[in-house]
Amino acid sequence: MFRFLSFLFLALPLNQALASGWGKSGGKKRRGWVFLDGPIMARFLDGMDTGHISIILRIFSAMAVITVLEIRRPGGDERRGVLGLTTTRGDRLFISLLGAAYIFLAWLGLMGQPLWWPVAISIGWMVFCFWKV
Image (tube, rainbow, N blue to C red):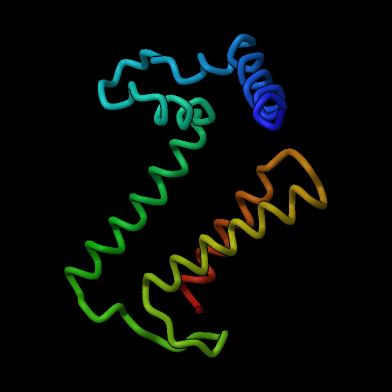
């Protein structure tokens, strides 16, 4: 009796889900790039657009610039800023990116759209971080 009830409660909903198309979500989608044909990468890239990719590339390029500066002048350019912290270039990059994220979240929570003002505020925050922090 227990096996029959477990069959009813487990196998029948699974069969219904597969019949409604849940099993087809992992199908291959051609995106033009060979290494992005797998089901995991296809689902990952469904939410990505040019804005997301642009932000990710800009963050990685900023990290590359910081890396090149660190190779050219090692030591991280440590200094003590207005916050009373001893920071390096990487610390200032991290503080500026974290601050920009909070600026955008606060703006969206309080004002909504358009997002041109938080872009300007974030650029100002970045300049402040690299100049005074």
